[in-house]
Every structure is written in C-alpha cells, then in structure tokens.
Image 1 (cartoon, one colour):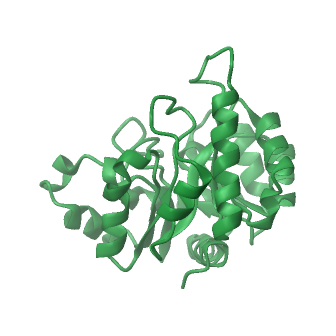
Image 2 (cartoon, helix red, strand yellow):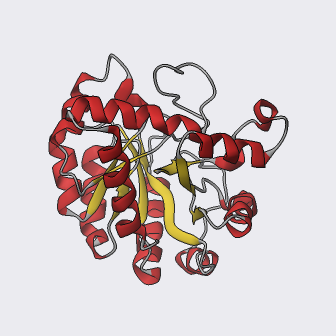
Length: 258
C-alpha cells in the first residue's frame, strides 16, 4: 500500500469529487493509497489541516508556514511548539527557503522564520518538512547551523542535484520525489532517484499541484501518487511493490508511525 508523504488535502478542489472529502479519500484508497500526510502552509488555516487528521486514523498532519508566505502570521518558536502538541501533528513545516518566488532584497525574515521552525522541531522532537527552491546552499547551511540533524526530516518535492541530496542525507534527512520525477525534462532529478539508498526516499503528490505524467497539467490528487511510484520503479529497475513497501517503511521510520 502506498503513502502520500506530502499533500495539501485542504486545498484540493472537492468539486472534482462531488463536493465530498470522503470521495477524494476513497478514490485514493482505490488507487492503493492507504496513508496521507496533510501539510500545513499557514497557521491561520491550521484547523483545516488538523481536523482531517483528527477525523481519519490514516491521515496525519504538520504545522508550519510556507517560506513564500511573507504576509502570513509568523509564529514564534513557543507558538509552533504549542500548535504541535496534538498527537496527529507528526512534523514541523513546511518550512525552508525560496529565492524563486521571493525577490526581496532583504530575505532575513525568511531565514528567521526557517530558524524558528528548526528550533521548534528540536524542542518537540518532530521531523522537519523542508521546501527549498533556488536556495540550496543557504538551506543546507542553516540546517547545519541550527543542528537540524537532531531531528532530521524530509526534503520535500526534491529538484536539486545529487550533491545536495548527499548533504541532506548527511543531516539525517530523507529525499521525497513528487510528480516532477516523471517529467521528460527532469533528467538530472531522475539520475538522483536512481542513486538513492532504498532506506532514504519517500514519494508524494504535493496535491493539488504538480500532477505527474500522465496527468500532468491537471489538478493533482493523492490517488496520483501511484504514478510517482510507477516512475520510480521504472527508474530504479525494480517492482512497483518494492517502491510501495520501501517508501511506506521509510515514512513510518521517519515520522514514528505505524
């Protein structure tokens, strides 16, 4: 059975499922998806991430503020720690750095917010979910400076090179592959996927964004993680079942869930 290690269930357009959250989850179950990590991107709407995790035993959630959300409320370390108390919250994030969509001359606000998330993760002993885009050096540097290896986490929707993957793994981080790995243009990323240790990778949809081939350009949904698994099996020259088991086992190990 598959695990969608990173999705935004609260952002999926339920019009595609007759306005039914249950229908969306059932569609995923029919595609062999048994677990979901619903990832928070702003604390103002944290309730919409937490509630599904409280209502469904196979949905987990995180708490954090996306690095492009400059105008969102930026919680302190103590506030993040408090929000992370429910048992359904198994991670801190998503957090990180993004130099692609943020063009401020002064990016100190983003760095400060990133450091707060890392510190909250260490206090709560919950892994980090990292977003990084055109900021690989600063991301690794701050993770090192804040001793993020004490909790580790996942580099979600990974699009970087093998060297960056190795540096992240050295810091106790897993590498997560999204639908991007199925794109014809993602040759370098596909080489990274081939090289990954079997105990260090996850798969995800990042739904409702970044639908994989053959659904590219359409709204993404958790059911489509099966296409990521199929592409990973092709790249790694192994069975679909192997990818499903390895990625699910890795998810359980990282987030300490059964």
